[in-house]
Amino acid sequence: MKKLKKKILIVDDEASIIRLLSMRLKANNYEVFVAHDGVDCVKIAEIEVPDLILLDMKMPYADGIRAFEQLIQLDITKSIPVIFMTAFPRIEIKKLVLKMGANGYISKPFDSVELLKNIEELIGE
Image (cartoon, rainbow, N blue to C red):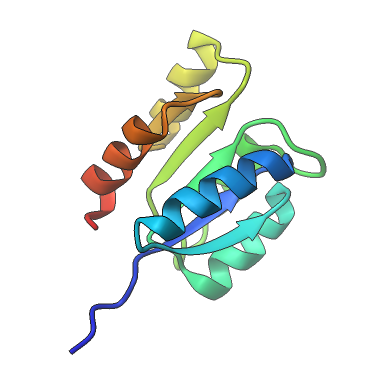
C-alpha cells in the first residue's frame, strides 16, 4: 500500500519564498498547498487540514498572528502544528507565538536543512 504524503501549507506573501519552500518540500516528498495571506490560510487549512503550517508573520489582510488565533479556535485546525517564519525576528514576538501554542519560529533567510529537520521532528516524513 502506498504511503500518503504529509501535507504542508505554506503561507507567505513573497512569491520567491513560496517557490523556494515548495520546491524543497516537494523534493522531500511532501504535498504542498499555498496561501498568500492569513485569510486564505484559514480557508485552505479548513479544507485541506494539512499536517503542518509554515506561517509568515507579516502579510496583507490578516497577519500570521491573526490567522493563528483563528486556526486555534477552530476544532478542525486547532491541533495542526504551526511554525512561524519572519524576516523581522524580535524576541518578544517569538515568546508571544510560542506562548500562544506555536510549534516553532524561524528567521528568514532560513537554513532549509534546519527547517526540514524541524518539520520531520514535528510530523515525521
